[in-house]
Length: 257
Image 1 (tube, rainbow, N blue to C red):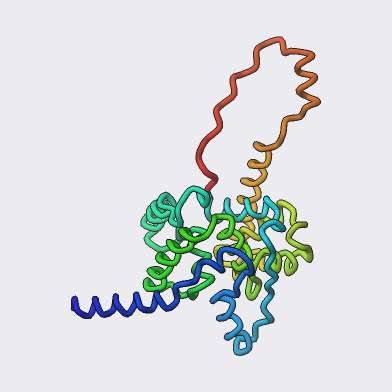
Image 2 (cartoon, rainbow, N blue to C red):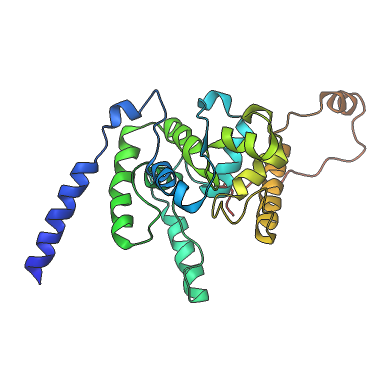
């Protein structure tokens, strides 16, 4: 049995070496076509699916509120972890154990990016094992901004709709720069299961999730809004009769769903 396990591990490492990416060209330049896109193209004719929609755009064209919506929805600690969110993993384990089933996952944006680029939608443990190695590789070779740029351009937003620009055109008839806050919340809400839950199907779970994301984004924008200078001038000229209340310190945790 031990010999068989060693042979399996050796063969698997040979396979990993065969698919191990050249990270240098991936670190900049053209967004590559993903494994998921190739699988879609291979199945499209036999399944009667429409032509694939995909229009990669540079990160500079993607508005900040679109980026924030995806981070809020999918990976609130994206900028602070190294590819694996241990806090989210523990939360997912506790949640799933309480319900006795696999209800939620804890994949980070980095994990989802390598899965889309190089692997398949399969849920088998071997695919997850490969995903761990590739996530380590992408985190050690690419900047966070580049990982985010790749993810936003390759993730699926509906059957055959890949990337935020194609999603903006497909659902709202606008370019990604023109998306408003409610629209980016809806796009972010599609990501767990984009074929079932998206702005076209408008399922009950999609509506709940998009409203929750919109609420988080709205509160975040309100916190970051500049002060009203006209009000500040009036207050300076007419000081209140009683001292103002002491401010409550802001929280330090990330925004999670």
